[in-house]
Image: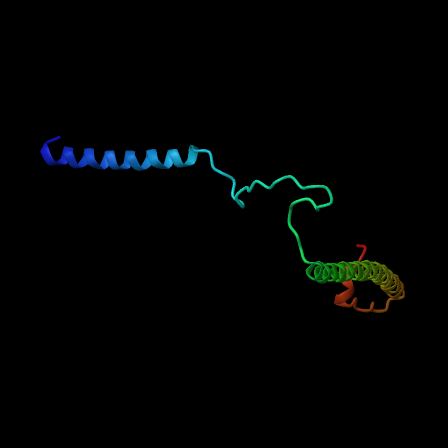
Length: 129
């Protein structure tokens, strides 16, 4: 390489190498876990509550009430879903039964030489055929 081209290429390679080395160092360096800084708390004396998060009784009562309400709502919705599953299963069983009755009636009509009834489109998915 002649003069300026070699120098420019050398500078570019040096800059790219420097950037890569910084990135490799950042990736491979051990990281500190995020979170609040650790504070040394003196040991609790007898009769005192252990150190930790303290919540006012009003806030605790309010949040406990909300959690209780949420649990009750979830229990109610679970009961509704279970009931609806049973109802849907019963309805599907009835629709399959209706489809069997229609098919049987159509076979009888065809045996007598009469035109069979048209099967409603809504019942086709419940056909056993």
